[in-house]
Length: 173
Image (tube, rainbow, N blue to C red; front, side, top):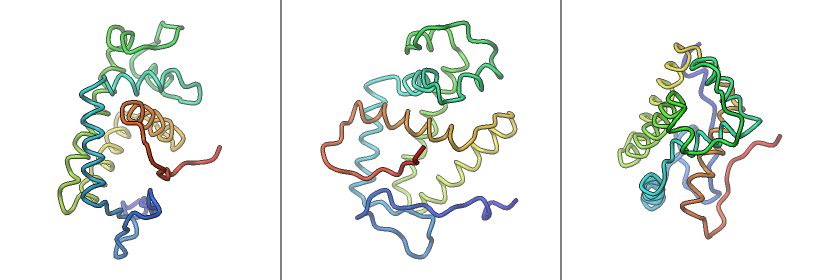
């Protein structure tokens, strides 16, 4: 299967966001939107352990298959309570590494926003990440990516509450 066959058109995240008409899968952010995203991310990373926060939400979310996926690669998790940042950082080395990888990926992706070919670079980063997961035999389905997205948004919005109405793309269950 070719990369072109894997691409699906994206919808604008806000009704008034400009969209590049030449390439239907490219979202164009204004300079202010890019700066806002970068500042929100930097504030979150400087304030809390974003990676561990995302991981605990995935581990505590019963819809997420993250715990069983993690156990299939790192061994049984002998913990039955609600996961916390302390538990992840102290007892779950592989989970902590995954959380750090999430932070590194999004930090790098947001750094790309200042570049004229940001969409292509982020697309390639995402593809490479998918290849890495495939080689590691990490079968991550679309609904799990929704859990990751929701966990990440929850963490970011707790640090950066939105004071105006913004339209989020979401799926109905």
